[in-house]
Image (cartoon, rainbow, N blue to C red):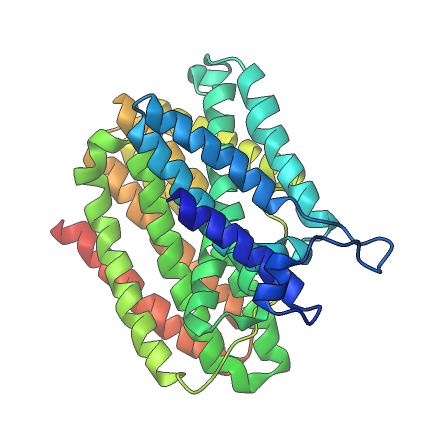
Amino acid sequence: MAALALFSGRRAEMDMVGSSGLTAGEALSTPPVTTATPNAERGITTEIALLVMYGVGAALALGHTALAVVLGATTALLLHWKEPLHRFVASLGARDLAMIMRFALIALVILPILPDQGYGPFGALNPFRIWRLVVLIVAISIGGYVVYKWLGARAGTLLGGVIGGVISSTATTVSYARRTRAEPALAGLGATVVTVASAVSIARVMVLLAVIAPGQRGALLPPLAWLLGALLLLALFALWRSRAATVVMPEQNNPAELGSALWFAGLFALITVSVSATLAYLGSGALIAVAALSGLTDLDAIALSVGRLAAQGGLGLPQAAQALVVAAIANQIFKAGTVLVLGSWAMAWRTAVYLGLAAMVAGLALILV
């Protein structure tokens, strides 16, 4: 493992030396010389790899075999991916570096200092838990944004929808709807991307529910799984119909903006209080209306609110499952309406058919599951 890592590091440096016209043998036998470029930077990849491998050897000597294997393999992979990583870092602008710093602020500075206790009406506002969910949402969105920055315009139709769904399916819907208004020929492609993004957003909600309410997965996830399955099948059909087309992803917004995080925290707090007040004064029957209104523009907030209440025993599992499905159906209707208002008619009717069929399957799940 150590030899592989060092070989990878040496090979990375040899690739750089090779650009000067020397052969591999000449590069190995020729002592290092100062380049003619005044501002050229000399890397220390091999030296750092040597230090890491020394640590790997020490870990092996102390009996930490698993740690040594992980360090050795990780070092080898990083050395092998040195050039692609350099290109990726070079593609990051000042906004992206600021994104990393903002996420560090959100996750490592703000979160630890927040009190972990309930405040406000019904004790429903717990600053630490609310912000922890904000960190989780932002982390998932940043993951999608990093993939977008890595691939950029090279992303195909399927991957474009996946990345858009991870970052924000609603924003993706708006972007492609506006594109088809200017370019009607992209109607089928836009409907495909929106359907894929919608499927990914449901999968994302299911992952969030599994994290915050692991003991209730058997009751909360199956109805959503019906909706996810329908969206996936429809997305594959739409992808098959638009297989000849390619997609250039529109510019994505930075998901770690502090304003966006504060907006989501406020929305989540408002929905949490609304759900608690509805249960206290109107009963679980009125929760459906709250879920439908909340799910129109943001599915994450209502899903997290309902999932947390179900995990704490404040809401029955059948009522929680119904609220989740109703919110998901409302979200599909909202996206179809968004395309109708902002996009071309050709994209609007396709999107309405795909998302409408998926919503019908979800409604059927409410009855059968």
